[in-house]
Structures are given as structure tokens and as C-alpha cells.
Image (cartoon, rainbow, N blue to C red; front, side, top):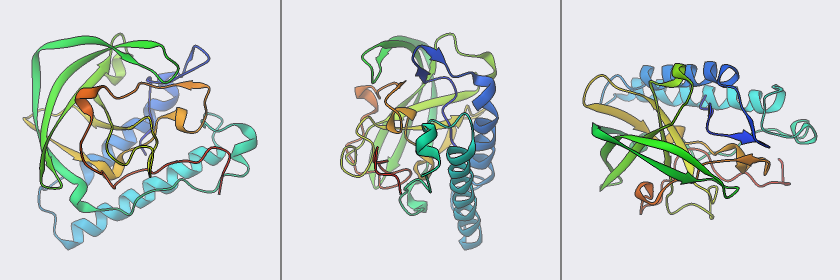
Length: 227
């Protein structure tokens, strides 16, 4: 299940990486288990879809029952499930991974108007829906060392504000040892501020705006309209 680990803060209180990191490790393991080949056969595709569906059910349970859920207490008892696009294997792509020789440090705006310092450490080049796409992977400056092998990929696309959260969505991948990495947009998730306005979430920078509709991953969560 994909959960943000140290990108979000509630009323200036950091969400501790020790609370969320086990979920991130599980998510990275899910991605690696379902990314063994670039051209999965039918059996592999079915296994991949099954793993994603199970991860979504796990995330629903986390939102419903965990004391670390981003939902308010009164929301949790009403909550049933998050909304997703159907799993679409065409949104699972292999990207060329190029670590930046000189990582770029800069400030990313958050949903509450504050700034956070991030470091762009790698360029990811891939083809999505037949279109060449470039994204950049980041890590937050001063983040917990246990998360140093996890790459944060915030992105915007043309579904934002229509079918998905207006403030963009996130991907996370384990840093590869080679020159390629699998990006599975079926695992794209909303920042916590999509569920609770008290959170402060990084807004994807312009260099990670995709001029396509990415109809994969998590969809819009209507605040005040729980299912």
C-alpha cells in the first residue's frame, strides 16, 4: 500500500517516519514483485492486478481502522472505500533512470502556502500512452535516513480537478541499482490533504506536469461525501 512517509505535516507536527515507513516498505516490495518483466504474460498480468487490488483493500482498512489514518474520527466510522480507476497494465511503464550528477536543491510549495526544501536527484524518461514523458524524482532535504532509498515522484496530469485530486498525486519507487525503473501509475495515490485540510502537502513542481490524462491510480476523494 502506498503511503506518504515524511512529506506531510499536521499543524506543524511531523508524521513520524517510524509510523508510516513499514507501509512504504510493503509498497516497494509490492512494486518489485509485480515488476519482474517488461512484457508480462497473461498470468503475470492477473497476478499484478490481484496484488494491486489487495493493496487497495489493505489501504482501505488502514484508513478505516488505524489511529494514524488521515481521516477524522467522525469520518472513519462512515468510511467504506477509496475510489480508483480500474487497473490498467498499459500504465505500468519502464523508465530510463539517470541520477543527476549535481542534485538540484530547491523549494516546493505546499498546499498551505509554505515551502519545503527538496532535492531533485534523478531524471526519469519513459513513454506513457505513446508520448515521451520526463519526470524528476526527489527526496526531502534532511529526511529520515531509513527512507534514503525511496524516490518521491509528485506529478500533475490532465485529470486533476476533474477525476483526480486538484493538487496532484504521488508515486514512490525504490531507487534502482541499474539504469531503469518501473513506474506503475496504477499505484498513484492522493496526498493526505485530499482527505483532511489540516495537512500540508507538497505541490508537484511544473517540471513534473504531464500533458496527458493519466487514468490510473487513485481518484478524487470528495470531502464531506463519504461513501
